[in-house]
Length: 310
Length: 310
Image 1 (spheres, chains in turn cyan, red):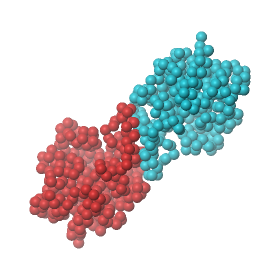
Image 2 (tube, helix red, strand yellow; image 1 turned 135 degrees about the horizontal axis):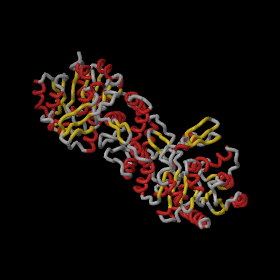
Image 3 (cartoon, rainbow over the protein chains, first blue to last red; image 1 turned 90 degrees about the horizontal axis):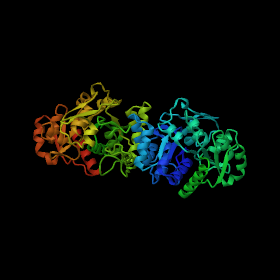
Image 4 (cartoon, chains in turn green, yellow; image 1 turned 90 degrees about the vertical axis):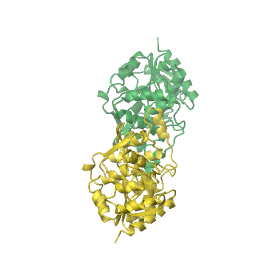
């Protein structure tokens, strides 16, 4: 079963890892948000891409979900001692990724080529694609002004009240090589439990992606459980955008696209409302606390997805 | 006694540290070679400047002489795993220096300003000046072609046979702010035991520096002991340039500039030849194996220097 998964950071990476456990490598392509990519200390940093790749490679920090396991922060301590910007947590091993990515970007290699080579070096067998090789930075419009995503998310710790989002340059960005082809060949598309506003919407803003995803059987997994997120500001964003955060709100967010929607057992009472949107609900345990949980959820989602494939 | 010391890497840094131990901080300015500066992995790296500053700050690796104490190499290991260039040893703490220097260079700050601020952050009280804020890369002409300095020195481990050196752009480079003023105000100038060809000659190639140094009482300390160097390729370079490596050869290298010359006790028999060049010799133990050795040599050099000051 050829599957394309769309993913952002930690939650998306976990389900991608579950899918990678459940499927042969050649059957899975993960398309990753790069709207939160930014340049920091002269380095090209792709936080979501790294989180997905580190997770798939078994290199991710099991406590934070982002960054690398067994990490040290000696370079960052040194930068801080010199009065440099210390707000973005750059581990030493992680820095190696950014240094080499930056070196290759400067010599003209595309992010998708670099990602392919990094995955090979890390032993990641499933295909991981950035949504685009073109920069499409997410701008967060807040009551305190417009903020580049990482300044909003990390420096300001997602505290400012959001009013909207712009995916800068999305209309002229090209999908990375393989993105549209993978979607067109997919038997089904899965939206991982990632932030709809700033992880999945940026991917869907790349010309052609939304239509290609909509043309396939499409199932989303709710990142909101019991009105809250396991991680990240998605629930806070819904509230600030004037929408009660819930699994139902996520289903509505994508309702024109979805065939199926997976919501947590604690939200089972929302299944009827989702069904009334014309979306088939699946109630399942979605909180992935362990690697086994990831695989179990992936298997449940794949079984559900199977029912949409002729 | 206002002293200006010219220094390259490890040997120069050690005597600079000795002088810093022996003089009030306001009496010492160290002018450092930047001819071996280069860009690597997108980072602005100033190896000699860092060696001098780390040494003065007590942060230097006591075994290698370069790099930092208690260092880890996790970022470099990660770069190597990704197939990136791993030939230049970049420690994690050291990387912090390069990252912050690069960030500040990109925002338009000059190397001399950055160095001043770094020294303040590291608690270095003596003044450390790069020879120039302009890039003056040393090109090593070898029988295998022209090589940028670090490729010759680190990547090729100083193996190719040298034929000469070019300090690219030196004729149009400006001395860093304070360099000429410090030389003009100095009661004496000391050439640290650094490589004449690729550490001190580049400094002297900056317009105005040679004349300003020559106008003051000037004492050099031989980097060659018993025909060899404690560290680095200076002796090999002399041989390849057709000159028998010796303290005498170093004295001849600078003979038009020098008032005094300090050579090691093992080379005492060369004192007469040095005297016949019109240079007053001082025979002293010059091999600095400990911090105390550095101070003892500095004190001996300063006592010697005193005899040239009216």
